[in-house]
Image (cartoon, rainbow, N blue to C red; front, side):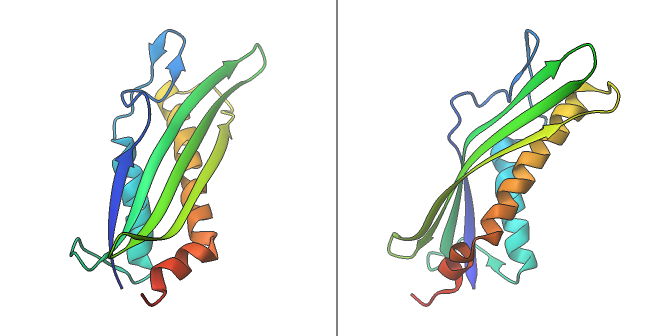
Length: 149
């Protein structure tokens, strides 16, 4: 089965993923490339061929929100990330065979203060991993990919 994975960044603020005090947190990797690549890698691992031929089924990964929040008190700190991702499977002829949104939250509690970017990154990665895992756990997603036209 041939699929073309397309990423679309639908976030209002495409430059940052949250605030740490007055400073915006800017990711070192493209958020949408990371989300698209995660879905694409999992599809390849499951035997799908990735290509952009006109006859390929399109998997559209839209990141609607990916943001992080920092909380600190005298006793502990936490980094919370929220991901809202929408995924569509579009068959040739513009037929939408699957359309689902995923809203995931991941909180990371460091045992000691480390680098802010590492801790935010752990929370953001956790939210993305949860979103991709839920997508592939949805039997309707795989059914839309393998169903006969």
